[in-house]
Amino acid sequence: MANKFYITTPIYYVNASPHIGHSYTNIAADTLARYKRSVLGKENVWFLTGTDEHGQKIKKAADEAGLAPLEFVDKVVTQFKDLWKKLEISHDDFIRTTQDRHIKFVQQALQIAYAKGDIYQGQYEGWYCTPCETFWPLSQITDNLCPDCHRALEKIVETNFFFKLSKYQDWLIKYIKDTQNNPERMHYIQPASRRNEVLGFLENNKLEDLCISRPVERLSWGIGLPFSSKHVTYVWFDALINYISAVGQFDAQNIYRSAWWDKDVKVVQLVGKDILRHHAVYWPIMLEALGIRQPDTIFAHGWWMFDKDKMSKSRGNVVNPVEMVDKFGIDVYRYFLLRDVPFGLDGNFSEEAIIKRFNGDLANDLGNLIYRTLTMIEKYYFGEIPDLDISKTSYDQSGQMIKNKLEDLPKEVNLALDDKNDFSLALEKIWEVIGLTNKYVEETKPWNLVKEDKVEQLKAFIGLLVAAIRKIGIEIAPFMPKTAESIISQLGGSEIKKDAPLFPRIETKKK
Ligand code: MSP
Image (cartoon, rainbow, N blue to C red; front, side, top):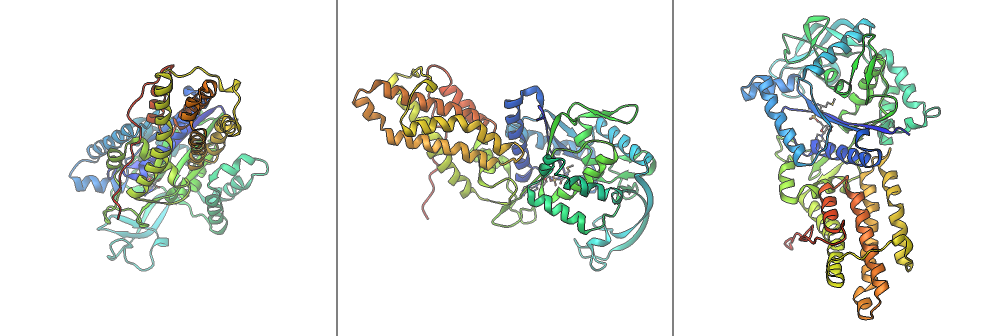
């Protein structure tokens, strides 16, 4: 098993402000990074995020804002960085595709592939919409009208550069399929349904070579090709390379060297389902062409919808993460996104759904367990936590069951997170223990133990609650860092430091 871990998120387009979708991937990646740091040590984990700043979309947004592209992207990048700070995202590096380190690297990569014959010059034929400034490949149009604005398209034939995807099609199919000799490749494209989708696509279609350039006169906002002053790179070729440009270099022999994109590192890449093709077809082939290893996992998560509808600016239903965090708190937002929907599936976002999780899982279950335990310690022990080793204490059946579950919990969480990235299952396992522990309080009726002067039993009982909460605090830390801190501050020492309840119920009006 690799003892180092490298995790990446897509780099986000900076043509508009960050929204719930961006925050979703970063919260998931942050949770995995925090989890892996707790298991492997901080120095063995690297977490990369960043921004995708070239291309037509960005140029257009900058023009509309009346700013030079770089001026414009600098502004929007600040919004992303501020949001990550607000959400406690613990990335180790933030890459921007306009940085010199990236531009230089992309040009080297292009040169290497060109010298190898994997990039070649050719004629590009397609249809261009002048008002939209968009080029439509034949496969995307049915008549000669623009699929976006429905105005007439102009046929364009131009010289461009192509990347030989076709040459690597059989290799890629074999690579994905060879799980007999390499069982870990079962996790290469995830979830399994997405792996099948990609395989189905590759087996039933002939890959066309990818046009990876745009003429400068049509698009100036991009990285120049090192072998043609008349062209810039297609934004996806530029963007995908961020994952390796941020963490390594080509040496004098054009061999890629990196401390993170390396053989003893587990490399996990989280992406949204809409950009799976780019990550599971173009990207693996780019890596192979450059002689660079494949990632261990490319995980495609689902989409958040609003009233079962796609979120979009024009529909005016885009959820603003800043607003949600201000309303409900960071940890509640993080918890909700990771708990409410299994990571690979689509989810429906609503404030009612957040409130339901809040009042149930957070206020009634976790908050209540902590608060009632603190209150009992205050009342029965004047705030001093009884010193007790639960491993040396015997319990009745329910107590013993909680003890066992606590012991198994790290393993259960690991099973859910490692390879599977199943955040909701991990949380479900933690909440199972919370539920059992709350039930144990109700069953035990500690006030009776006090009445009957059962000193030892009361101590054993409180000791178990404290041990449970501390363990739960450790396990939820990657998901809810602030809550974990609060648990340590309230119950981590020898005396309690009682704060206001963590999750006071939100009253909802009855309809
Ligand atoms: N710049 C490219 C990615 C390049 S990676 C080498 C890009 N950027 S994006 O800003 O448009 O989208 C980034 C991510 O946000 C994608 O993974 C996408 O799936 C995700 N989401 C956008 N809207 C979303 C939802 N409503 N729900 C969940 N995620 C969604 O694509």
